Length: 429
Image 1 (cartoon, rainbow, N blue to C red):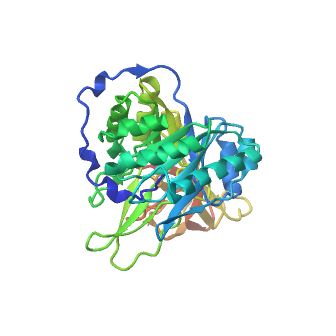
Image 2: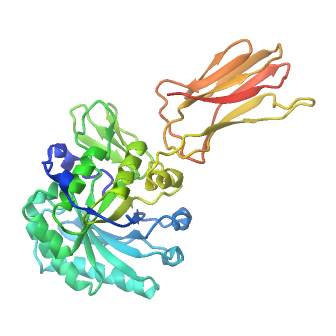
């Protein structure tokens, strides 16, 4: 599973053929189970807590078991230290995934390369069994060049035969769907996950969405028309991509704090429209495409991730509804005798809703007494002073998000002499 790492592979993908008959494709009955990818190399306490928090809405999870990197053409597996106890406590079906870094070939069902892949898969399954975790499926996650799918099928067959009765699942890119070799590849694996998070153009001026629901639905209908069982991988993350003045890719930040970009780097955000994503999920819930067996979210919300949704946002979208936006303000400080308002007051904006966006509001503070206000805003905010009111609002260019459950200081207010005041958060559209 990538976090926009394969960005350049998707340039121009939006021009994929759309089936003229997709509206007439058969539909399926029943629920649409939803799972999440646990894609951390570092299994810390927040990861385990997040698994427990999602038990009531997740049908299961798929865990990154290993990543294969290439050094001088030889495969080198990197193994996260999985918290098997957390998975046992999770109590839901668990899948393991083997991520393979880009590899140009040649492909073969024999030899040292495929032997290494088979060995990693077998070792992971043995480790899970010894830890008391039953693995329901094994995923092979490899972004094969679309013209080399026939060769990749040899890897798939070899890995499938090495893991015994555990079902093998492959992840697939939208660009594979139109390839003549893809149906055979998918049948070799029995099941696949179509990753519909990508971008159509890396250099547009407008904010680009990692997942365009219109295009995603077309890809899902195209996958459904193949008549083979599949799941849909949807994103929960945003990425920041740096380009040089000449348009060359400088770097990608998705899972961590943004890097220090070189001078002159143009940084572009690839985000998510939670409202549109929720509408798409709701549509699939009531009108599920045939052969679509579920949704897998990339990735599990973890409190320490800077560029990922938190659980309140994901819960709302999983339910097919737009996340609620609710903001409150807390006035901190010592309350003088005979008053019910602190003076001076430190003003703290709190996200008490579900939205993961920048605060779409302003903070209005009013009073009745004849006093002199002294107010200052903190970086990223501005303040407008009137005789009996002050208004705090986001400064131009402040796109900082405030995830659900978090808060930020926006400024302070002192009234001379002290007097009661009223604070109101006003939505801004």
